[in-house]
Image (cartoon, rainbow, N blue to C red; front, top):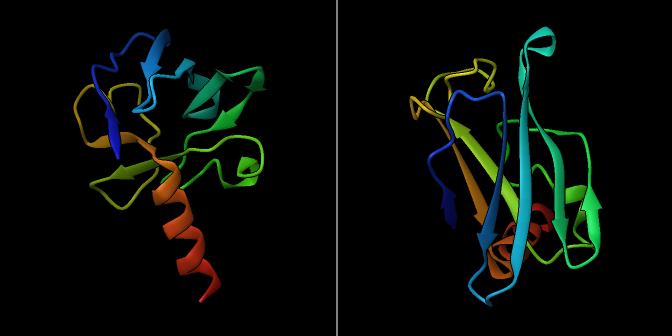
Length: 113
């Protein structure tokens, strides 16, 4: 897993993430106060764009896109709640990760057992 670090309390932030195979994900995160949540405003990878996915505590909250992208994303929060506060990532109570293709496959195998 590749941890996405330095997420601030800025409600709109964009970053390029370099994957182990040197390909690049352009990720735009957006905090919506009225929804009490963080969202992927856009994720662009090799011509595939994903818009509006809510970031939830899940080993792969991008699972529905498994046939379009070779990676996944996971979020884990120390407390028994979703990442609903703007400071959840900056305070590190919530952590966001990119899953490799092998980790996505491993999770799929676990779900299919």
